[in-house]
Structure formats: C-alpha cells, structure tokens
Image (tube, rainbow, N blue to C red):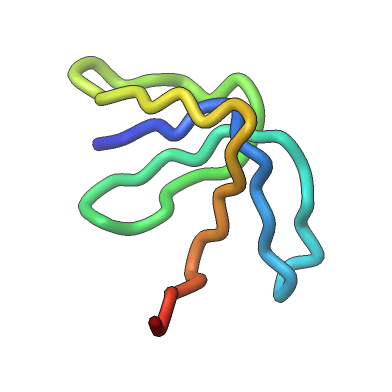
Length: 60
C-alpha cells in the first residue's frame, strides 16, 4: 500500500484538479481525497509541490 500525500491531483476525465491524497492498494487507486485514513504498514510519499496524474502514461 502507498499513500501519496498532498500532491496536485489532475485527472481531466473526472474534471479533477485539486490538492489531495491518493491511496494505492495492490497497484490500483483505491481512494482520492483529503485526510484519507492510512492503514497500518502503508508507505507514505510526500508529494507537496508535485503533480499526480493517475492513469497518465509517459510514452517517451
């Protein structure tokens, strides 16, 4: 499990552009929001000042 905390989450398909946390479980996004609960044993990545774009793939 991974919690990406405090990044600028951008997802044009959902019209989402906000500062939020993103919880990843088993390689899939399990939650997007603020103040997400952090399950025991979850790695936390501080994404302040970074853009998080779930589903976007760099093809270069």
